[in-house]
Length: 336
Image (cartoon, rainbow, N blue to C red; front, side, top):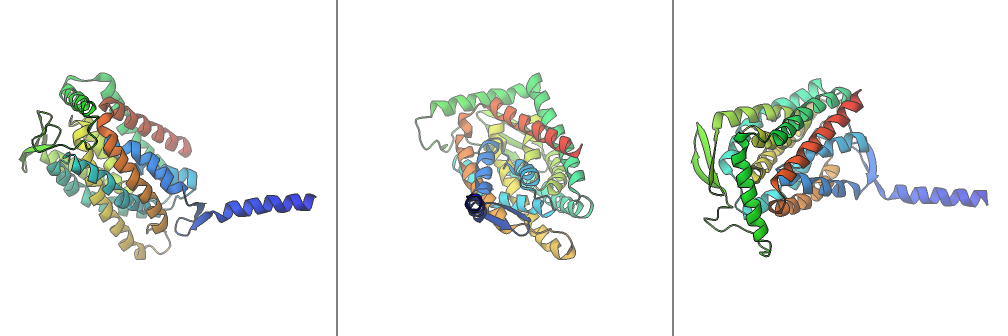
């Protein structure tokens, strides 16, 4: 009887193990449905704020799946490359892609991503130091968002009024299944000026102006941090647009995602190119794992972008702020 019971238990364990896949680059074994499901759920919520969700997938890979080598950054960026087009496509259909803002982000973050990837490989291969670095970055951004939401400063009230107006208009169009802006629709993003000095955008009848050099400079710093963290910079640049430049979250989401996509493509190429120079360290992405995450993200980001206009802006901002602070706290606790 004992032998039979033992055989049954071993058989169940073996069956359970047989449904798992070994990812050689990551050095982990996990059920094949876990990566796409995790990516779908995370990206559905984060894409509403213009963030792909890679900044949450990274702690999931490191702390839950046990994938902590430098190649996790490249795998995260591969997720961005495959998943982000779902959200970008939806924002394009609704006419909410601020192209001048997008290209300013790309120009700044591209060189930053290169520098960040080099720093990650050469000086931050140790997971412990990596977690401390990530905790500091995320805590700063999350605290800034919380402070901004609690204070509700006069400088941000113009954006809040526009966000409320856009949300109310979207709720009034709930019966319209397409929900796409027609030419001249205030819900679409218009470009009034795009130059080396300033970028002026029109949205919901209001004009928003940001210094071009300021956006590019901020994007450069964000690119370095994003290159190290493996997130393409979107999780940092989107909250900065909202908190520092006082832009509506409904306006910046598409630009932040598109900028993250372009820089993530560059990041993946860079990691693959650098891999031969570091033969003793896993640098290239785990292609299968990244593809599974990306497929889940593709669906999640499309659905998140589609549903964004029906969610109040303050809810989106609080969601981003709380996730950032909680993730930073988790990393800090792991380091301690």
